[in-house]
Length: 138
Length: 138
Image 1: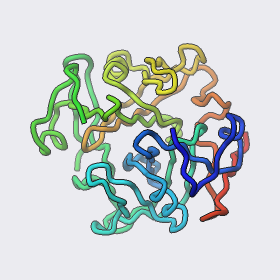
Image 2: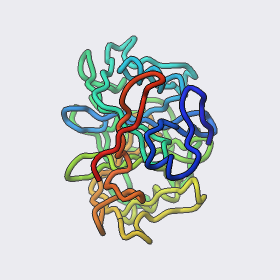
Image 3: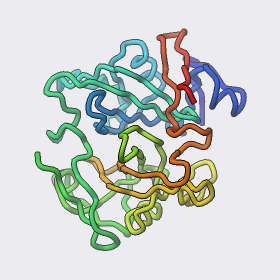
């Protein structure tokens, strides 16, 4: 776990868990996990990653920025798709290695490149060797 | 990204994104991200990690199992705290590197060791150098 000098530090568990200082703890790849839910429906839209720059830009612009692991670049969500995510609320978890964004997507209101509103459009059903994915109605 | 022989494989993007085969893609640490929301309120309770064993056990037992990165061990959530998470629904995202669990916590109904129901009990407010954390009422 590493910190970034764009943010503060937490000297102990009490400061990390109960303090008012934003002191995100980035993983070995310098990322925190970020879950985006729809501010109105509550559904989980997507799970993505932020490096320090993406988190700082999200805080400052109130629009979601992520780090694209596949493209290895800063990703202003919606810059090409129109699915810009206006951030209604931003939260961080107890040990400051994950953030939760409540967002309102612009454009067609979706978040997933496959065409569903949420990236989580398939349920895992069954168990063991017979587990299968069942897709929602489009 | 790696696969695990407990699960299937997806030969191409179409199979990965639209297929019925569960073919999770684990990261360099052999983990997928897992977000748990409360099945009744929709709030995000926690964000954690699963290796192949944790995911397989979650599917088979319908109780949430994670991989504890800090303890480096399989973690049957609630085994010591009583906050066992009964899984109401389990979903996977488009590129199969993240899962979403809708759960009902047993015990005191919480998920966070700090004492809040959700681990995300602090909002990030302000911007730039003045960003600060504001805790929910307990």
